[in-house]
Length: 406
Ligand code: UDP
Image (cartoon, rainbow, N blue to C red):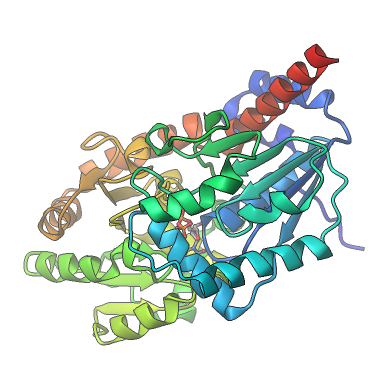
């Protein structure tokens, strides 16, 4: 039989040092067999599923019995929750009674199907938020919000507050996402798994094979953005910036995207982008091929993440880890990853993005310098070891306060 294995904390030794690995092992020891449940709304497509997938396995390898459950929803449920997601990031919403009824009913039905006998429950993002009202609360419940909460729509926020305030702690991705609420708030920035297929080092042969498979030309430098087809990721702005840049440099643009089951907007955005296709502007939907994501990020001369809002932007960390020169939108969590002009560029307009694409394509030395520094930034701050340790510390805080109450 094949030898299956999952990443062990020791595998991180060469990247973060043995001392850190030992410290994490030690912190996890007292939580052996701790039962942790995670709830979110999609198995794949997007940074949340990406992280839960790796983090739950790493926690299991550390001895915590960590589960991942995905709520089931109807198409109209996900259409409503995507509107809620947009409203939490500042968009408008018409919260009619029927929308609230569908949202709350689907979550109630999920609670009927999910039995919980856990020591911690972690609920990710707003979709499963109301679960908390349907259980007798026997353990700490944590709301892990991955969204940019800096300017939520007021009506949306007021509606969700009645559940948020019942949680025992809330985790947000950046300090400025803290918002008025009852539970204590913690900041955990997202992180990547350097060992999965998306992020591990591929051979040149593997990369060539993946790019050839999708007929991606490599005769000119590649400029790449990999994102769900979502207006906040500004794919149209990327195409415009590329067209401006192309007046001065030759290159091929690849926009690779996928569709998340909890994001029904994707196909409309993709359809409207299709009109932009040309010989040197490729719009591809094969973003579920993680080896292709890796191959493109590794081979690109410039990686863009020109978001207009971004909770964090895992794609930025993924590309920096691959020593790429990255241009990110000057928003949200991207600002914590890219230090403008030091390990990448931050931009606020199509024109700026175009100018930086040209500059980077003309200057290999600058690309190499950003690439080296970018990788170091991720190694120091944005690998899963830091993330899992933050969770262990949070569990410890609860453990201490429970003991002091006993
Ligand atoms: N992703 C992917 N294929 C795609 C588009 C995105 O695998 O076609 C992955 C990407 O590599 C990253 C995640 O989905 O791991 C997106 O996370 P991010 O935080 O950048 O954005 P989100 O989609 O969560 O808003």
